[in-house]
Image 1 (cartoon, helix red, strand yellow):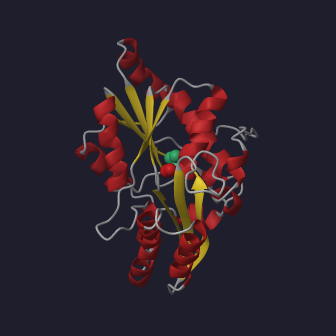
Image 2 (cartoon, rainbow, N blue to C red):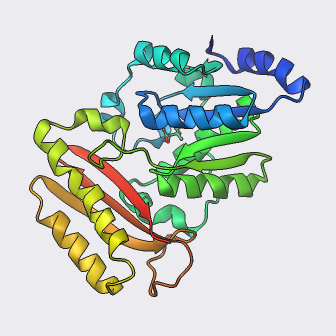
Length: 279
Ligand code: PAF
C-alpha cells in the first residue's frame, strides 16, 4: 500500500493508472476507521481498479474546537487496517497541504444545508463539501463512496457535485451496525459503558418508526419515538424527524417520495446521529 502525503505525489502516482483508463475510487475519511469504513473500501474494490482512502481530520468542518481536539487519530492502527483489506493508496495530507492559505469561498448547497445538522452545526457542510471538492481535485476519482449514516452529508455532497457538474459517481453505502443495533461511528469510543447502553435508544426508535410506518399516523409515530428517547436517561434529543430524503423537509403524507427517519442526540458528552430509510 502506498502512503502518500502530498497532492503532487498523489497525482503523479495515479496518473499511470488514469492513462491506462483504469477506474479510480476515493473513500474520504477522517480516520479512526471501523467496520463501516472498511465496508466502503470493500465496495470500492468491487467497482474500481485502484482504491484511494484519504485520512484527513478536516478542521473547517468542526464548529466546536474541543470536538476537533478530541477527535480520535489512531493512525498506526488505521494504516494496519487498510493494509489488511488491500487498499491501494492512503492519502494523509497535512492541514498546510490542503489549506496552504486562508480561504473564503462558499458553495451553494441549496436550502437543505441549513436544516437539521446545519442548524446545530453552523457552516459544517461548507467545511465538508469544500474539503471533499479539494480531495476530488487531488484524486480525480471516477467514483466516490460515503456512508449513509451521515445522510445529510451525502445529500450535500450530491448537491456540490451537481453545482460544479463534476464527473464523479457518488455511491451511498448502507449503515453498518454493531450486533445490538448501534450504528458504527468513530465517536462511539467516547461513550462510557452506561452511555453505550443508553445510545441504543437511537437505533431502537428508528426501528420502531420503520416497523410501524404503515400502521401508525405520522403524528403518533413521531410522538412515540420522541417519548422513547426522552425517557432514556443520559440522552438529550436534538431532533427525531421524518423527512423527504431529497429536500429534508418534514413529510406531511406517508406516500411522499423517499421518506427517511433521522435522529440526533447527545448521549453523555457525545453527539450521535443515525437514520433509517422508510420507503
Ligand atoms: O464523513 C467524514 O468522515 C467527513 O465528513 C469527510 C466526508 C471525510 C469529509 O471530511
